[in-house]
Amino acid sequence: MAKIWDKGFDNDALIDRFTVGRDRELDLMLAPYDIMGTAAHITMLCKVGLLSAEELSVLLPELKSLYRDACEGRFSIDEDVEDVHSQVEAELTRRLGDIGKKVHTGRSRNDQVLVDLKLFSRERIRRTVGKLQRLFELLQQGSERYRDVLMPGYTHLQVAMPSSFGLWFGAYAESLTADMSQLFAAWEVVNRNPLGSAAGYGSSAPLDRGLTTRLLGFDDLDYNVVYAQMSRGKTERIVAAAYASVAETLGRLAFDCCLYASQNFAFIHLPDKMTTGSSIMPHKKNPDVFELIRAHCNRICGIQNSLRLITTNLPSGYFRDMQLLKEEYLPLFDEMDDCLDIAAYAIENMEVEQSLMEDPRYRLAFTVEEVNHLVESGVPFRDAYRQVGQAVQRGEFEYHGELHHTHEGSIGNLCNDRIAARMSSLMARFDFAKVDAAVDELMGE
Image (cartoon, rainbow, N blue to C red; front, side, top):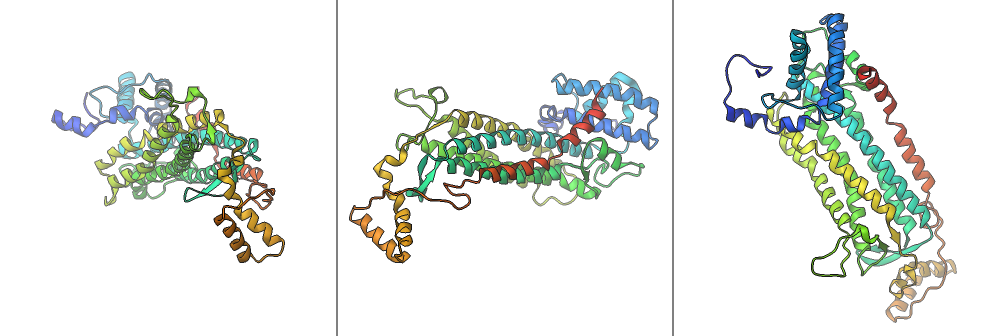
């Protein structure tokens, strides 16, 4: 099949294989969004007089049929076709004849892939937001359920001060609110329309970029057409940075769980069915699930750097280097979502040890409590500190009092309701309903 940029000469087969790379495989992930972008584009072409109403009435049903096929996994890219953009145009031409050749008026594959990636990223961020919210809710439930169950807190991996499972679960829940802020920032960047920037310098065709923005449910435009092209790579890095933030939280939680599930700690317990064994040691029950979450999250944290290395020092304009961004970027979303799913499953089934602080190994966690008790009775802090320290040195330290942590965010005042309100406020900023309405109107029956 002739390429859409065919000028009457054949290309070297080896060059073809190298330049196409993994596009056919990866572009299947973008197919629904390329078709959606095409539907918006030709609707706009009709409005500005570059396509007749009759032509639009023929093209749109075929695009909607292709869209259903793509969403349901029935869309494919032929071996002799370069990418999804070429396949959609080729399929329309095959079905409808010369009308299919009109859909590319006023655009380039450059702005096609830009809008595909924006629409794809917007949808995948939305999915991740839902999974992150689910994990947040489970962590908050754990925080409430175990709010009064004490555990030792550590600094430098040395027993430090009393903590609680309520505090521990709640810490990771609040960390996810910061990550949600990052995801919203990424959402704002991807929810801007680059369509109409063509090859990066606009078009002499009388395009209505505001119309395609509304049709696709975008909040705004990438206005400057040169910037729109420059956003390739930048957008992916911003999204990858937000996902790295989530991965940092999740990887740290996984490390804690690996540590706390070990026999030397035994703070948490996983059901046997969620552990793995050893081929030689019959007693082993390994927390492989958390070890793999940690490894996946470490890899996710590195993706933004891989993207940066592909685009660093490129001048303005389009370069084929950008094709390689897909290989790093597109798989990111499934990897992150799988980690969120399995982490939620593990947290939901985890049990905690409820009598940890009865162990004499943790009695020194209460030294600060004793210092504060002495201060409250009138002893200067530095003198109280010295008295308790000397008792520790003599092996005579004991503490039998109760904990009275009342300030915001402490053991006795977790503020989970305020953290939940913050998350709800963040969630409300994502206008998913607007996106749904636009897509339904554009691609619905």
